Structures are given as structure tokens and as C-alpha cells.
Length: 116
Image (cartoon, rainbow, N blue to C red; front, side):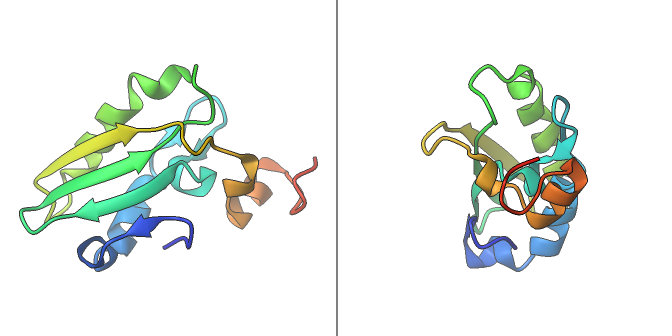
């Protein structure tokens, strides 16, 4: 799991499944998944199976802000141990390109220093 994501122990125990799910959900404008884009800030899974996801978008006018939470909920609730999901959107802190993973930078053709 990425170091820049706050995650509790219960969610950490299933981090491989969570990462695989997040990597299957793409920002349609950038064509990179939400995990490698660095859109996820925090994951908390409680003892009842309720997962709270704190995330952001690359821009406050992101067209996928209306559809992506439903896709996230649909995919996460298919995982064993997750009974319900709440997707909370925040713009504080504002997303920055520095949150893109090394893999994401390679996929997008961005150098490690952030330039093209």
C-alpha cells in the first residue's frame, strides 16, 4: 500500500484486494487508475464491513465526479468482508501531480521530476 494513504489495520489486511480493485477504476480523462494517480487519501474498514474511502479528483470540475463513486462502491462491495462503502470526496489537500506513483509516471510518459 502507498505510504501517502492513511489506512487502518482491518483494511491493510486486505490491501492486495483493495489495490487490485482501485487499479481497475480509471480516470477517463487521464486514462490512469485512481490508485496510481494518487486520488485515494484514506481507507477505513470497520468491524461491520463498512468501508469509508476518502478521495479526491484531479480537478474540481472533473466530469467523473458524478459517476466514479458509484463504480467504486459497486466494485468494493463485491469483495469478501466489505458490506457497504461510503465515498467521501475532498479537495483539501488539493491533488498534485507529485501524488502520481512511479508506475503512473511511466505510463503517462512523465519524468520522475515531473516534467514531460
